[in-house]
Length: 255
Image 1 (cartoon, rainbow, N blue to C red):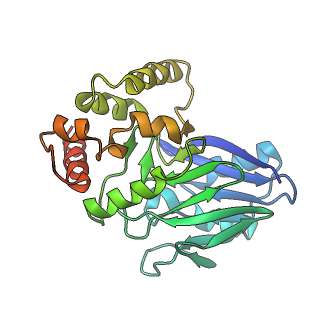
Image 2 (image 1 turned 90 degrees about the vertical axis):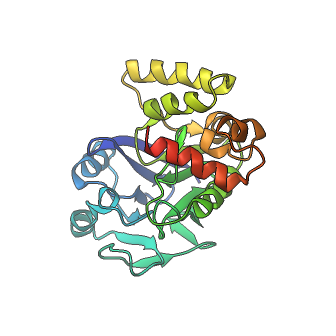
């Protein structure tokens, strides 16, 4: 069973993703920021949309759902929180569930914090994590609906995945994320290496994702709130990792 993944841009800085099962022809869109780029990508590949896997209810992740469902009669899979405003849901999923896209299997991880309903999808055979707005390349999402301890626990859940899994996130924010991370860890060798890579990628007009989780664990300061040197860098030596994470996120909010 082979998965083909296509990445493209939507809206101003969202990423769109298609995950295609070569065995059955099934194709999932991870979220649906807007319909046009997704339809164009499907037509370019000659694929038919069978599923939309929604990560959370924000408009820039579900804005294209209705048009895509009308055009393709695809299944809409969404988080279990029925209070979240996601239209036309066919299947609700929660922690521990598995969603099949043709012969491909996606594990559901609940990763609340950015929103209370946020989930991430893990395609283990493809070594791919679709984390939307929980974990970014060298960053993480703002905590709008949850708490800092909740978001930290979600990040720990993603950090526990193997180093060779590739992170596919919701937005192209890496340049700004690197700039901020360097204010906390200016001497982090892995971060400095990533900064050079990101500069080269953007100058070449290339996206900065996917990125390896192993690299994120070394360079993403939001995943490193339990590292003593990071706690000391923000004046919170000896404090809990959740408190250190909260301080880092507050600084990023105000950067």
